[in-house]
Image (cartoon, rainbow, N blue to C red; front, side):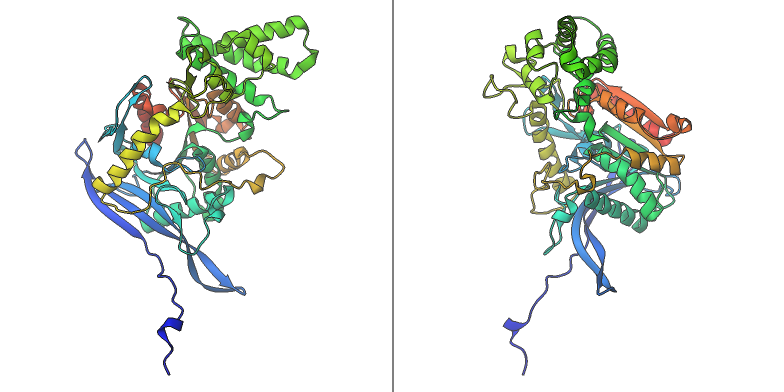
Length: 480
């Protein structure tokens, strides 16, 4: 007798890649192909030690741009992602690298909704094919049906899954012999540095270069917990830059202000903090006056916080007399808080400024121009990845400098581009300089690292002059 259909156990259909391809033309007249959609991420499955196939674990959203007719052996390819953790790749995609870009205005001159998209004449697609990757739970990327997302929400799971997408795309598109680059922003720089080592050791995939935009490879450089004074020291030049932007250094050139702040931070400030109660009254008064003068804060405030300026407290305090707060991602932006007496602002005004334009642009662009439809919300920046797991660093601070150094020692041709915004209060430029100064590489490889600086913030490309210079700098790095 046949089984009752109601009793037959049914399994969900195995997911399949869902990709859409469209044709476009660059302002130069060159044609290119855009391929966008979700790629199924599978892992090998074993039962009692026996291989029993590949199991779908996630569906990862990818947007790739390839120049038509290019020679794969000569044409570079750049894999790009942002950070968070919890960020999609929208910022690099529509901010500086991709063939289309957001038009949103800038600090003090923001445009009104619904904003606009424009051709990006300076797109890196002129020099390199581009692959934008949204890690699991960001963008349209999700765990596969019946699977948990938690394994992807942590340092190792993230590195392995993004690395596997890079391997898959490279193999399926016949690009193993192409020059290969990674471009990461913020936490994406930590991911990129770790990936350089992972791709080499796991797959034998050696890269040509890393583009680290708003770099943070060692979390201790931004740590304000008791017992660690390094964060206060490394943030000081950024505080001085932000104070300068808001007119608190008069007509002094920014370069002079930064030079003074760096000199003080590198010697006397660190010494003063390390002395603690051993400072004489005169030494303490001199330190208070110096820090106040550099940062634009009152001597009374600097004294009350014991010479230690935590970053969000600084952004909330700097323009308190004007009833304004300044941005963390970009200290050029200002806003208002509901309570002008609080210590920590409620929202970052620079984040508020960019969320609307980039969200509108991405959702329009993917559906209307790239022809991809999905009813899921595109997670621009999500908290659903929290708590992010750093179990690999239990008892230690999070850092990947040893991984980057190992990758560079093994691959002598691996070059690193570090892009810094002077007004970036999330990943300060002086902290990046400190981190790379500690990199365990021989002097012969030091020339493989270059720094570029911009008078803007974390997403320095929202500042038009910086966007143009950064685009030229990235193009030069890829084609060198």
